[in-house]
Length: 623
Image (cartoon, rainbow, N blue to C red):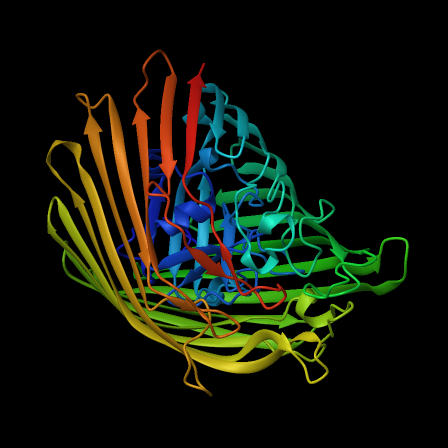
């Protein structure tokens, strides 16, 4: 793996609790999005408000914060935007999951190497090499709600060393007309037409020759949202649009004296557009909705930056990593206006960020490693911060590893939290960064060649937690108004059974509370459990995978409770039934369970019912 220390090492040596999800796992389980991949990882859970998907871990998943306490990278390139800090994991995520070689899930603070947003975890996605395609791939699927996807990919490694991977994907869905919203029972019987209908083209390219490589990607997700926020219910003009693109040029050079140099320069783009048909009279008023005003957000980020990293081993015991990164937001534009009416916000901020980091991986003995490092970051908007991490990794035998880990990390206030103003919203320009301190003990044991167990105990403390709520004037705003802790334990069993069977079982207990009130945080399940079983079929001509996900009850922003649930997903995957042809069939929420997720305080309701049973048929052909 690469992401835990920014250099290749084994999972056992990594200074973090790490999980790896492979491309085979993704195919076997029928995962469609990064959200579904992370739902299968111990300790993680996802929610949806019908507009975006959000990821939480070990009890932290604040409604309305866009997942900005987890950092997502593609081949090491930061994907969180600088306006909302979004950790995109749904159809707004840039990469088709078919292009993933593996997902490295690195738990705990990662700001000592990565800086902002790396609070609870770093999710590093490694893309497939051109050689893994071996030519052309064509893939298509049909799913519930009249959802169609198509993908065309080409990859190859040529004799002259040229590596190339090109791919384009298109998704179109008619949306789910069958979700019931009891808060709007008097309008269209509580059903929103074409809820979640979307068009979602994306593209990715990777080209390399020798030590130089170039990557670029783009996604443009457009989705109707007739049941979101405070908009008029079932108004087809409610919609959002998310564009995300990047390009990166990288040099990786190894000198004769074992110095290793990595240098990269990059460009990032993000744009958000939102359209909200607002009523003159609130829902429940006999005159609702009255004259409708369509309010709109139009936000744009343009950024450039670069990073230089050097690795060198000294005295055969110290692997030193030194790096510096510069990031410049050329424009962080936010506009809010009524279409055909007044403008409430027209902000054009810029920001420079500088980061310097140092890490020493010290092999005290052949089975005892001390990994220690720290990073200094300076933000023009709020100042500087220093964040250390240390881990002692002890392996008394090849089958046993113990880790003691301490880390500190931060999340800086983003442009939306700092500058946003609109009807009902107030800006908060003096926000401070959140700071987390983390302590963790891990024990990893290979019991026999077929069974592995991993256990963890953890304690997190977050100060100056940025929270979304109402100010004394009744306007929505952000503030450093909370401190919270999470403490608990996690256990995972991973077994490779006879005849190719594989089973995984995990359980996480997290007690996550607001320090001032002692109350459990919103959208914070105390218990999260997962089980999966993959069974080869017909003399290994295919496989069947059953996955069961469950979590306990959670509280909403209004203090109500959404009950716990268990859902089952099933996927059949054929081995190639003809030359290069593979078919899979999946059923999601197999038993059609009804369950709900909490949503942010900018909705008129505090929980939303999620989708019921869905099916997908997928065909992939290699040429």
